[in-house]
Image (cartoon, rainbow, N blue to C red; front, side, top):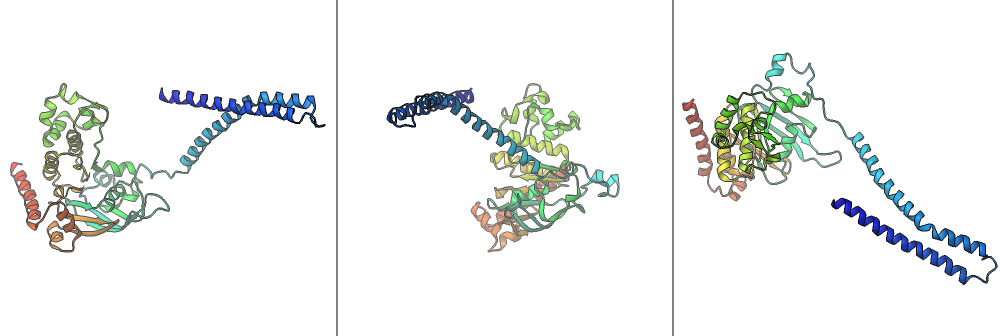
Length: 377
């Protein structure tokens, strides 16, 4: 309605001004005829013709302005079509048969979760500066890697490269011996799991949001809910797993939405899990639940955690520190904190982690929780 109103106002504005221009032209024609009436070349026929044309000039001007406006509008559509035509397409969805030696290898890839990043450099668009430069890292199977750095250091860019949302300008990423640039996008992305900062939920039932493709039984879904501390909450809902979730999960809290995404990851059981600042917008209690679930349920997975809250990654196996698009440091939290000139140490001090004992306590906590989980099993 507002757009329609704006269109009417614009048309009336144009009509008034064109009418003023037309009246001025008619007045100028008549005034010129009176002013130059005694000259030989001004005849009655010429005066009549000029006034006659001047009377119709408003309509002609109106048509000309509208045609010019329409042309400009349609040219935008042509520009968009040209832009879409010249936009590079993504890589193939399916993996070529020659990449894997047999179907078994393709079915179970990745089997261990080993990641090798070799001289990786990426830019978001041609002719733009590199956002990642000569990144090298070897992540062993089942390691829990914390990825930290100041804003704009390149942390999330690494995730984009891992999922091939941005193709490398140079270098490569190898997962379990396979260069991911040779894989089909559908194959690659279906074998990795990410819990993003902004939870992705759609309009549908609780069951559909957790298992959109219907690959898991209700028992498996309830197990995932129990492991992510959501079972009690779902039991209080009308219709339980058939409870309707609004678009974007607006009828749930931010923490509940994030835990649902985590439950989805538990169901998928991928060998590589990426947490892209998953706890940035939740309270400390929910953050603790997320970290507790990751420690207990993803013991045999490689976990990459991008975090602003250093307490979320202080107990990681190793810390990958980014600075200005490069890997500045890559070592255990204790070793990095012990270095006086360490960027990680500076980040810890800014976050209120003032002693190496805090770091050791973080590592001891995860060991105790893992031992407890082993005893329970």
